[in-house]
Image (cartoon, rainbow, N blue to C red; front, top):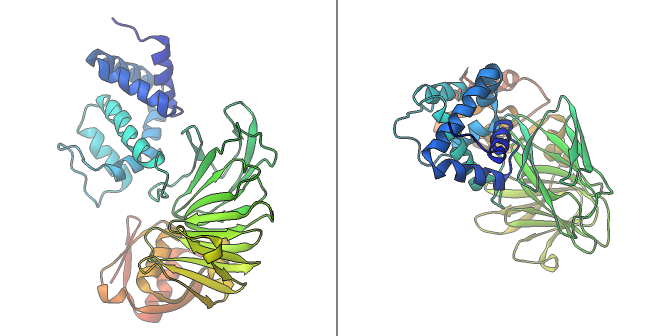
Length: 399
């Protein structure tokens, strides 16, 4: 029987442990596609692995974030497989794997991961993957790590040096990170629905990330260059002051430039507006094809709004607490449509809301809640506004 050479065995081992990078993935895929015998060898190797770690493997395949992302991103599902939208994630997994040979599924999974890897993680305009229940960190080399907020861990660079420490729901980068050939190296943090996370950048800037958000940032800011980060979703920034290195938050079509201040940015891709609320200091907000000289300047207590359709920026005085209370788990709704309220609740609690009464979507409501069970919020709307609801399989149906 043909044997697998040591290098391919190493790649398969990395595939099993999900620690391979893009280059290694492509090499393994190329080897499998070269010969049908290679595919058979790959499957047989997984059989041995599965026999040794049957329970662990099933758990990994059932719970790993990659599977949920793969299913959600497939543009052309297999013809022989039908997955009902009403299935929960575990049902999807069992249905799919019951209809194809067990170990051939591993090959399918490998190639599908390639689609997921290239279409999602290699894009510069990364969007948060809200289907995941894990907080994840994508490193410069393409490796993705799951962050366990119940534990602590160290973030190690390719040269073996500690560049950051994670403890609970906070990741802190070292202020004295070695320069990497004077070239910016980025990490990207993804926070799913139902979770929040804090990150302290290498310059000391503290960022609170809200549910369903992602932040792309350099592991080390370079001398003589602006400190630029890229946000999808919502975050509260407490920026370390540095007159020589302005701090820029890029949020889709909007740039927010500061020297040192505190402000909140909300710019979810599905929202019609991007909002900036200034708590202290000053910021300039401008469209990406403009410069700071053309910016709309904000003062504390003012919200700046970019309308994504008209591309116009407007300002108004606001109570900043309404827009920043999410850091402590609070939810504030002021003159907000029920459709937008539902979206915020979805992000906050990681539950899908289906509004059956379409007339309700554009009704305006005012309400505020501390961090409390979703049932309390639904009961409030039910009692105050006579709304009917039911919860089934992590979905909320509102009539």
